[in-house]
Image (cartoon, rainbow, N blue to C red):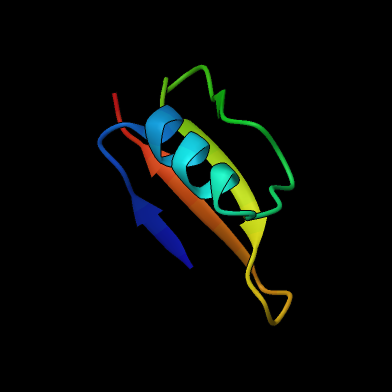
Length: 53
């Protein structure tokens, strides 16, 4: 599952402060320049947040 965010770094910090365990820190794919971060839900599914440029 993928969810778009307008400020991935802020969302990452908010979720992290709530105890979400991330697989990665936010990083930028270059090109095309969008930012992503991955984490697992409580059932072990990998979820992705992304922010387009």
